[in-house]
Image (tube, rainbow over all chains, first blue to last red; front, top):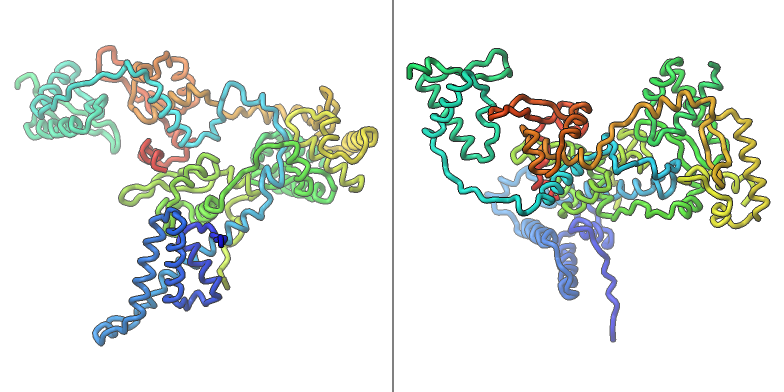
Length: 241
Length: 173
Length: 173
């Protein structure tokens, strides 16, 4: 004889537990953990029988329930009893979470009973022509849209444009020479400009090490006129060296 | 200008605005009455529309004022609009409620309360513009933090975040 | 339904419609009164709005009915529309995105990525104060380098640039 299984869809392990507590009409502050655990596991078995995917969260909760159960079953040893003095009920954390979750479930229902725009109430109709040329109001663009735009650009880049660059690891000495060369041309240089155009972390580190080395060797001096102002790197008698 | 005139100008501004119009914007345009008087006039208008038996009324939403059709007419207006009303799953709604009350909140904080992964849901709420990324939390890993948007207030007809219903204590299951 | 109710439904339909709504469309939705009665009710509504001293009135335009602000209020309504919300085209948004994520960046670097000239867009983004010139790059030709501005952070409600979510973070949502 075929039988119908009415399987309620639960939003997660907490939702399932709340259902079991309600169904059994037990006090949430005094959950009969053994029987609720048994029913919880039964439900997971049923899901397995029906070949439903069991999300990892359900299994984690099963383990938590069994842990609580074992803690409550085993009488604490003399030593533990002293330790446990003043410690809370092993179920306490779970109860707090269940109550917190129930509050938000209730609130979610309450939100849905509001007058919802485009379901219960409508605003003045606005002609579609108003949004010309795909222009977007700046106040309405979210960061996500900005990122999506960036992703689009990256995707659109013609594949032919890509080329490989053999990565040549630069040494600190190479960088020192490069900085000195730069200063011979321009005199002072702005700290930030040492790093513009550098895409690779290795080179950033090398550049910084090179700068430290130059300071140590008293080849350059670093000047900052005001707090948070521009940091400048000035050569010290570069010509003599 | 007399009171009647000012009131009709206020009405025309609220009517013509594409989005809820904040009181300050109204004051920028008609600068004569002080803020308090203006608020009084708007309150009078709201009262009039409420009692007048018209097809729409004046409402305070998302930090501004907007005319909206009355819920009693929704059945007919829906036929006109035919668009799909905002569909939110139970999971999305619970997540939205958590964000509304706990904002700014991180994904893992939401997941702790719901007991399940909320990745896909967050994405869809961001796409629906009901929530937005507020930035990153100053803790190790710098996770993204979320909050509700102005659109959220508009959709749920809320004046501001403080007019969210108070989160009730669960007395009994 | 009584007359009052029908009238308020008619109002809600006219109000919510995107364009002037023809009488036949109204009849499709509320089919009870015959065409003549319906026209009579609409005429009554038009009359009411005309005498009521409201900021808008009901008008017959382009083969349908529509609420429109009254000419007496036009002076103020124009000012409302004048406060142009800043609009961005798709191209401008993409350019802004490149600058946000690749800054400091030169015009030619942006053009390399986008494959088109961005001179005009850069100027308009600077005008809108969304980007700013950070300086000149220490390479031959000393091209200008661009970065985002404080206004950019305000628009996207970001505390600082490091709060800008990364591509990966959004992908993981």
